View 1 (cartoon, rainbow, N blue to C red):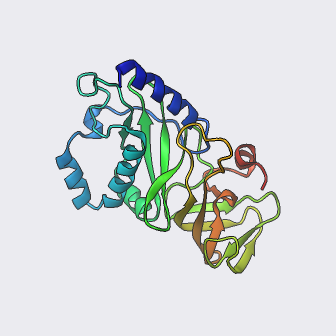
View 2: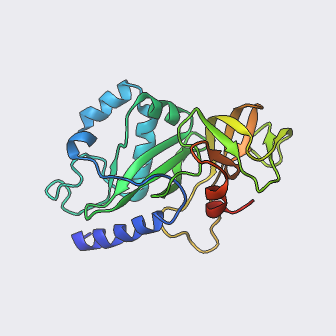
Length: 237
């Protein structure tokens, strides 16, 4: 594929990804910050980044993007393919990946990009969840703090991550929760969704004030001051 074809295709895809709900604005790192080699991947795996690497590789397979830190260099990336970069490789990122969420920078060499969020499904497979430049409605660091936004109706805490699972408790709106794990049930569409495609869906496992599973659209990151942003992005469900 030609340089122009790659550029046109991925500028359009990144634009579509930015229309979805999710994370904070992505800033392109320097090549030195991102790292470059297979040797680095081996080191990362040995240092406990195996789940993060699995999520990154799944995103690369889905998108055809490059993972090398010199992806933005025209010599190393003559086709100008999109780039996946690490936003952070601290211990919190590893723990979050082990609990089902991995976040990456995704951009094109011409400039612009987003943060892309991968979720792990029940089979242990990493799949695309969403991507955007907005602030996050959902908590993306696990374990973490969150609260309930359910249009005033409260949310059911279920024994298992399914709508037909037994209800163990019901929490009123604005109730603080501790989220421990995320499970992606249905992946999102990378780029423009096909006609009739449903939204991604998933569940958070919480440990307080009750133990069980809560549907993702009722869970709001504690960094948000109230339900206003949630309601603007997702509506009152």
